[in-house]
Length: 395
Image 1: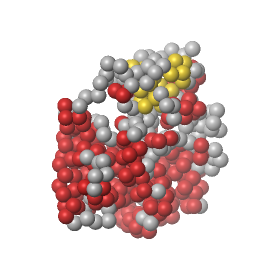
Image 2: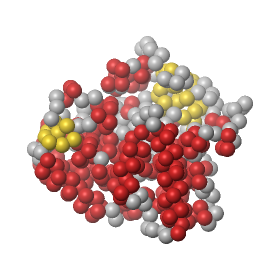
Image 3: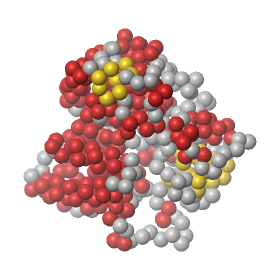
Image 4: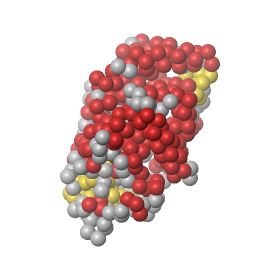
């Protein structure tokens, strides 16, 4: 049986490339206990079938206070403001609250609903590649990956264009877990209070106006839920899609035969999206869940009330499911089995939108920027933090 360090997953060497760790977890035939940086017990599961089972297991979820004896739920008014908002986010909720809140916004993210945005996104992508050609040397995040998802989700939600740079800064602070994260959450909440008040007086065709109307009509949506819901949509709609686009660019440029194939046939852009999701999706481990009782999973027993780390990265490189799982190959026939967007009730709400935005960007890049290449040695790129560090490119 493979031996594991008790906090090995957070070792700097493992952070640079966690996949050998997940390979060993799968080979061990059981969940692997880790101690996370906060000192919590954390059972890692990395096999495809086991992760799928965990994602839909009725005894694994988020709201442990509903199930653990002696752990009563803290009254909302006793929680600090930031913790109160975080506790109402969809990714931290189980049914019935998760079902209720997701139902309020899900209609805006169906494939039909997002398809109407394609011409608008295409125009934005055209402007970005034209600007990139003019510059000659660019940053792949700032000039290609970032603007589309940031502006699209802001447009859907209803954030006025002059205010969008502030949202980008707030989102980055919250996602990076920087010391500025809590203040960013509070500033966001205060801003949203003001914007909601304006939408009550003068509604527009956007998500905030719809949610404010529902709340005012007694549709069981309080202020903290509104802030948490919009904050999550903005952050998830920005951060994960930016990560998907920039990692797709990096993977193409470090796999010349794949980049050549896309340049010769830009219609392969959708395949690039799916293989990037499988090979290096935006989410490594789903937000930690808890066992509500002893659970048999991954060949072992996870004790009740412990944290479970279901690794999407591990599942999407499982050789029992994917041929040559550690090869980036946009022609693979098994790619649609990936679970980069999760599974079950927490399947990514914005999956259709992320796929469309990324496909359009890869199409435009292949057609309009065929000479695109890295401006640094690939070994100098920190792939785990690429999204936050930048991607220097020559056009």
